[in-house]
Image (cartoon, rainbow, N blue to C red; front, side):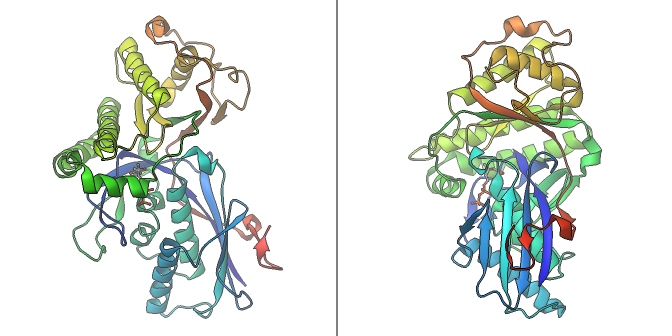
Length: 390
Ligand code: DP6
C-alpha cells in the first residue's frame, strides 16, 4: 500500500473571484487575490492511499463516506494528476489501482469558512505526492476542483491569474509575497449565528454572470485596477490601502450578488452591523486599522495588525456583548497576549454602536500562513492494515 498524508490551508480573498467563463474547466472572468491563513488554526488534512486490493475509489470526508467516482470535479483532479504521472513515466504503482481517501477539516465545514478551497487543495497536493508529481504545476488542477482552491497551494499573498487561453493552461495561481513578508498580519473570523440556506458559490456566480450588469463592469474595469493597487500596497506594507481596497471589493461583490436576478443575499443583519462597527472603529481611532471581507455567507473575516488585536477584541466585546465571552472557547486560536478586557488606552468605545447580545457563535484568531505541507506516516488518517479510516 502506498500512503501519503498532507495538510492544506484556507485562503480568504481580498479581491474576490466571482464568475466563470468556462463552467467545466473553472476559468474565471477576473483575477483574484487572497491571503493564505495559518494551518495551525484551520486546515484540511487528507490521507490518500493506493493498493491492489482496493475495489473502487472511496472517499470519507469528516467521518462520512461521500461520492468520489460520481463527483466529476474530484475525478477530474485525479485524472489530471494521473496524466502527469503517466507523462513522466514515473509510476510507483499501476495506474489502475484504486484509492482510499480520508479527509478532515479541523474547523466546522458548516461554518461556511472556505472549506472547499482547503479541501481540494489538500486532495490535489496529497494525490500529487502519491503519484510522485508534486513538483509539477498543480494550481491549474486544484482550480478544477474548486476555483478558489488553486490559491491554497501557496502561502502568503496569492494571485490567481485568470488567463486567456480556452484550455485553461494559463489560469494559474502564483505567489505575490510569502507569509514572512507580512508576518504580523492577523485575522479574526467572526462566526455569526445563522441558519439560513444560501445559494452555493457555484450557483450564485453562474446566475450573476447570466443576469447581472454590474459584474461585467467589475471584471473589466474595477478588478484590474484594484489588483494592481493591492499588489503595490502589499509590497509597501501599506495596511490602510490594503484595508480600503479589501472592504470596497467585498462590498462590490455583495452588490453584484444583489444585482443578480433573483438576488443572492449572503450577508445578514449581523454582517451589516459588523461593517458599521469596523467603520466606526476606524473613525474612532482616526486611522484605518481594521478591514472586513465577507464571502458567500454572513461570517466576517477581519484583517488587522498583530499590535491591534487586543484593542480590537476589546472593542468587539464592547459592541457585541456575548454571554460566552468569559469562556476560553469563545476566542479560539492564537492566545491573546493581554487581557482583552483591557482596552489599551482606547477611549473611543463610547462612539461605537452597541448591538444585541450573543450575535456571534465564536471568534477564531489566526494569521497569515504557509502553504500545504506533507506529513509523516504517524499522521495518517487511514489504517494501513485494512485501508479504512482510523
Ligand atoms: C466568494 O471557489 O467555492 O469565496 O469554483 O464554483 O467551486 P467554485 O467556487 P468557489 O468560490 C469562492 C467564491 C468566494 C470568493 C473567493 O474565494 O475568491
